[in-house]
Image 1: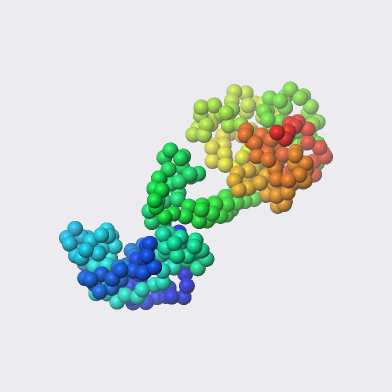
Image 2: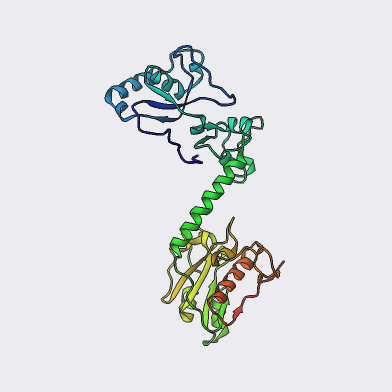
Length: 325
């Protein structure tokens, strides 16, 4: 995991560059065979001059003979043994520990402070195999191991947020067009027909429940019977749905005059974020504060749509009525 910029030490050179293998210790053991510190194979810089057929042949030979005893220290390692034997007689520079810091060293000697680290090696249990990323009954359980899942989770969420926001802006680059007059909001297209109000203004359909697609969700969703016909009868029409459903919903046909708008309502995003607002939404159904999450998510989705319609100039929004539970 890259957590920082590579420092000026990482330069073009004719030497190999590697990191001493410091795990739970603040020092690296020296092999009696090579006379050098045992090297960590996680990060090795190989000069272009070493990318030759001769080097490849030597590496192949070492791999084939890796099961043969070399020295008690190197025999405890797998690919590290081959690399240590290969680099024993090569020009070598040792890089600082920050180029591949073992998570055990991070926890025991750095107190979890990773500001100057470039790479962190999660030796032992993997934080991505722990809750909440996998169910507790299948999570990797090693209570005696040194771990720091919070460090990985925090960085992962930061990267996830950045990626999701970039993807959201790429797929929905344009702001909501102006919405003059009243707006009509419903959760099923058949409700539009029952209203029988052709002058109701801009029409919006909120798709907030994936169960309408029945057992086909999310692999191969299909519109329920009569939905396409009903939507075509009330077009132009804007359909709203959670952005996390976009990969499944993009394959559905739309009648002429209908288009999707996505709502970025997923952790760690608030419904207010899409308008560049503060997380304190004074017009929320609870009268202020962070918009409440709900399950099913209809309430949060509805109020996100209402805010966007009001920001786009809608005189009023008739239809669904969100409630604070």
